[in-house]
Length: 116
Length: 117
Image (tube, rainbow over all chains, first blue to last red; front, side, top):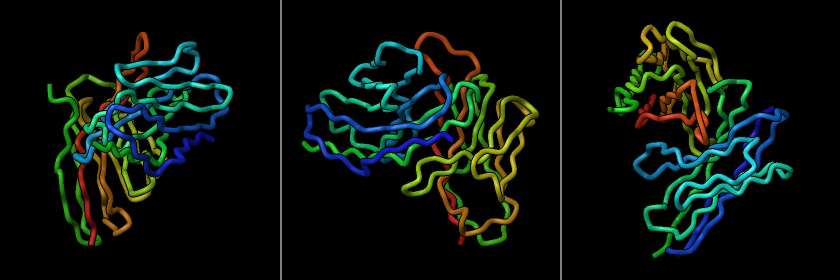
């Protein structure tokens, strides 16, 4: 069965430093997609980055990069040069390709605190 | 282009009351979803729809019903509210097609905070 595990309930990082948020997943499918979403205190869910299981290169979007280690089934989010506005909840999610665009499973989330 | 909107934003119900949450999207997306978010549990899928007139159960469907009479709208109904349904409800939508590094990302509404007393 699909499962997403985020083992860090909370993380602290100093402004301008990099931080890694951990995510491990479990699936028996070969084709799947991995996502990261940000939820600020205002509550909305914001899509950050996507990695396909067959993508050979790690995904990057601005200050966000996804450290994809397929053999270890991990998809860690790296935020470079942290900003105060990065303080939020971060969710890792996975969709198996054979389910189309639905049945995306979310992890419990990691709350990131950026210190000035 | 409003994206995904949800109505209402907040609601307090008494046990046994009914209500309908409305979700609307203007991106012509095929897929729509209803999630609930509870502390420490992330988002859990309640029901989803892969197109107008079709719906299916997600991970936690009990106590909820849905309808998708129009492509742009997805309604979530609670027939007899229970305190266990106190939660934040999110609607989302996504496209069928994808290209390049885009991968069916879901676009979320702002959420509805529901309290059942």
